[in-house]
Length: 122
Figure: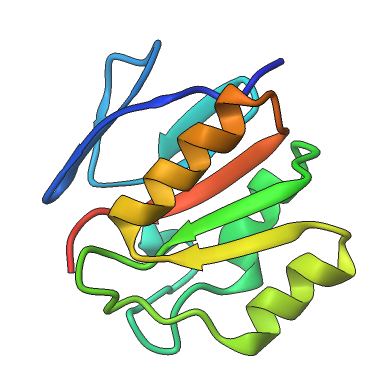
């Protein structure tokens, strides 16, 4: 199963190829995607992305995780979150969201088992 291409990104809106939904924030993995609802884990811009936000994507067997911190990089990613991924043998890229989407799509096109979480506003 391949990771779906992120078809479009603009402020507050993301579309994933093969999915009719428009996301504000989203999670993607080989074979699927869904909205990333911060309320599920109590996530805020600070301290930011927690291992609990990534667990679902990690369980899909990804080898690389791309984290989009937002258009202005307001979303934090604490070292403990990066450590969680590395301890699971997963490469991690933490980038501004537009750059994160570019990297994610390039990896997906190469057939890498890549997943990601993306914040599409601040």
